[in-house]
Length: 530
Image (cartoon, rainbow, N blue to C red; front, side, top):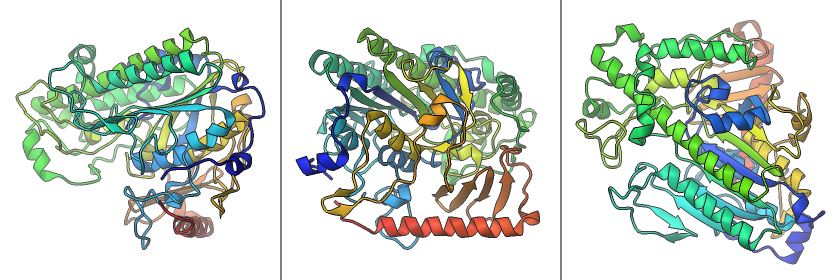
């Protein structure tokens, strides 16, 4: 899909209402499969000093949500619609929806929407959307598709043009390379386009499987996780409570809940150290404990390195004299993953864990810990699958330092918020097609103070998992399971199912969920598709 912005469309989008220099620059940093409590500023033991510093100088949201999976989150983040509404997540009975779905013409991406306000837009990293970055409105792009090979990717593009495969033993590491390209784009912006604000979208593949990390980063965590996942989880929970970020109990570990998709052959390849259930740590063999501790050390190393590279990007913005007026958002596309599989170049059990020849996944034991204090994992619409850290930093625009926000919010809120900050409105028509209202809300009031953003509901549907939140009430059902009802004002851990005592509330919320599904079905089949 390629959007030619005519003068008429620019008028509909809204003309520049102030000098470009007065508009904030925007940096969105998206992690991949990061758990709610993985960061230091969210109670974790992993060293994330650069993100912690952003949190100290800005805000941390404690009830911010993604869509439970990578590609729907990216669609919602960059369009402002639920992924199902734009055909980017599966709707039963509607063909050509899902990971291979095509957005309608009325659903351009954020760089197209920001262009009338004078923004130049840059993309670095993972894409997982339809189309290609430059064709979809970005001015520069380094697109790394081959996320299964952190050291030697074979599929990547610069400005939509394919690059040759990276040779083995070249010194390439994906997380560092993404920061390098981001910094290069920002330097070019400063040299050639300093009179315009920038939008930089930095989409890391870390800490998504395979667990690939630099040896020096792994070494920092080699002994830390030998005490086991229960002990680490308990410490994280205590840290979150001390930080005043949560007031709930610690969810019970679901010992019988394993990966969302079975790959039994992978377990054979990975050997006796792998386990596909979050069993009691003291029930594991010595081999299993050692294997599992090493996996979490690599996961931590990937996050540590990501933080280091974020620090380099922030330093570049600071050198440009733009840090005070740059809005930085950091979040994750879904909760930590319980998946276990072997893909791409396979797994050599004799190779050093975390190296290019290995293929390890975090698995349900440690993903339960990463998602502390919540239940379940990536793909599920329980809190463990959909709750993400959100750090918001904008020194010039947010007066509070080190605050937190309990405001429930969702990735669909990002586009409306950024358009409001840019002083423009979404178009009412594109190519004579009416543009549906976006479901998200402007979060600027929550940047200023703790307050509830009024909305009818927040809604989820992925891979058969369903949820809806109305106020503090959440109705949720795993695939093939009955509805559960929780009062999140008292029970973010989803420990006390109230559905049997609240049948009327369940019925009303179920009807609302059904209505939103039908709304999504109607939108996904409307308008021209590319």
